[in-house]
Amino acid sequence: MSTKDELLQLFETRKGEWLSGAEIAEKLQISRTAIWKAVETLRAEGYAIEAVRSRGYCLSPDTDIVSAQGVGKYLKKDLDITVVEEVASTNTMLKELASEGAKEGRVVIANSQTAGKGRMGRQFFSPKDSGVYISVLLRPRTVAPEKALKITTMAAVAASRAIEEVAPEEAKIKWVNDVFVNDLKVTGILTEASMSMESGHLEYAVLGIGFNVYLPEGGFPEELKTIAGAILQKKEPDAKNRIAASFLNHFFEIYDDPDHLHYEQYYKEKSLVLGKKVDVLSGTGTRRAEVLDITDDCNLVVRYEDGSEGILSSGEVRIRPLKEGKSK
Image 1 (tube, rainbow, N blue to C red):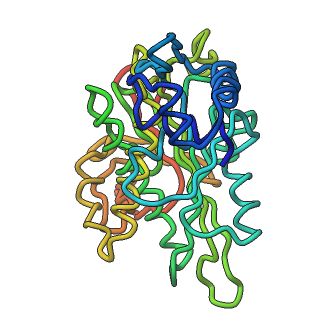
Image 2 (spheres, rainbow, N blue to C red):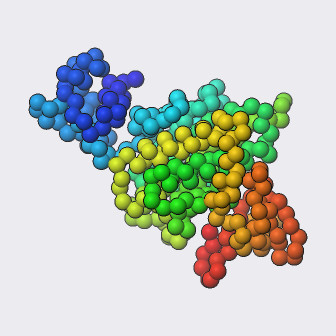
């Protein structure tokens, strides 16, 4: 770990406290000159660090920059976290690490993505400074491909819980992979998997999730203005680190439990589509239906307009608006 990273870890664990140069030098076994250089580097990265003669240094408690140290101080589980300022896609980066043998629990977090991945080949809007974009490497044992849906639904539950810990609003889940606040999408989830040809089970899965923490500078693009929203309407101290850590804590709490803590009931209770009229989108077209139930496997039970019923294990639905306007 570099001097800058060690200093940031110390600042994050004691955010808002004054640390004298002598104390820092003793704890990190570095010189005063090395401290000053590391502080200047952190300031250049956007960290608000005060320096007062006879008092030392203090990282402002209002700072809200995502970092491995900032997330780590809230984690309940030991995870290998890499934070990058910008990347094409955290999922793509982590899949490359997975192919090189990275272990389960490897996490990549970005402040922005230039080619963030969404479902159905779409791009996930990932602007700088307004969101947190996370990918998690999983190596589940003896999991068949059709059960991979559970990873996505576990993540949706973990995301909704994390949002409600940070924001004063209720989070709702739109099957299968979106989380909404005040009827606007604030989180999208994409799970990508590699299957073993020998066993027919997953070799690994990369769980990707993006949180719209704040409204982006200049607002959302025109095509997203009536669809996308933000978790928080104003800056909150350490919100990005808290959301990221809370999501990881809740996800692994469910994932690591043999019975997955029976999260399916919570998923159902948080459903945004249960009992609603929806459009079911598939490769063959769009069919209108009503959502009747959600199974224990988090599949969607629907009744089509012709009276026939079906169970959806994948795909996409859009809630049909009561009045004219865009559906979700």
